[in-house]
Image: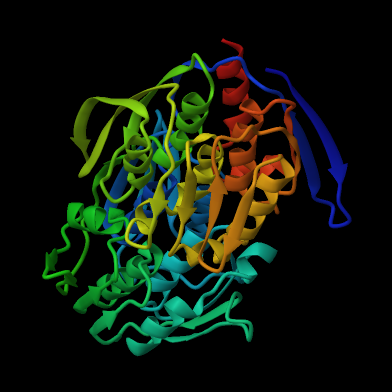
Length: 444
């Protein structure tokens, strides 16, 4: 497989990179994806509010995690790197310092939402802002519960960033029924409760990823689940911990998809995080008929990890509903590509959250599928794809969304004529080496 790259200078000065991804005869070999982005964010943030030196080992995970790291440095946290380990010198739950200016979260929704929970219980005022994408993302979902706790927090008139947070160390306990399942909202409330040393009781309509709960427990917090409710007990302080970051399942999912689609492919992906709240995609593709084996499963730092071996498979269509969506939210665009080659009509519903990610992923996904010759339809909370189709090829606008850029690069491998991916370098947000891995595997 050969990639051709064209760089266009935008009026803003940002470079727009187009990549033409040619069809691959097969993909084979072994890859190690970057570290799990969700866990990296949390390890840095929790390390910053713990007492002592938190040691983090794992493969770096892209620009979003660098945003979290820089935000913490701007808040007075020392972070060093040596011998393959990142050391966070914790300041305690109320020890952050007032920044010199606004805090720039870049493109990272996880950074702004989780950090808001921490800052809600500090003793100073902070303004959080980011790029044009982050300004479009809804922040009232954290403003509401944090305000109920007594935080003084306001968003822009649009409901997005910039966020102004006037810290209040004396937040109230809260019992809150979350209207949507969101690990980011849940984490913001839990982190606010930890920093204010108050109790938190939460319920959510469907389970969301639970990395925050696992990691807070590793640092000494008491968090229990009872009758569907999550309860955090007041804690005096967090102790430092050692976190080993598994490799990112969401990044692995792109290459799982490629191997499933392309005849003759087989692939080993090592040391992948297999947290049950994160592997909805794995369960769904196995229901579709995927030939996948899990090897060397073990537990480290409270997280399950293992190796994934995947072979090309003939797939059947699937229907995904709201109950499954939280565990597959980042991988849903890949279901669109797989659905095109599966037997039957694949349908996703209850996934309106996709419209408020880095882009409107439903609209851009469906338009992209149509651009490469696939029959697909969108509706308010999801999409459908007719199966048994060829991916012809074409040019796709990804809207600067890293997951869509990588999704349509995989479509290019499985296409007849190749796919040109616009704004391809957005992949560096979560997977800086994605295109070099793509080239290596498809050239084996």
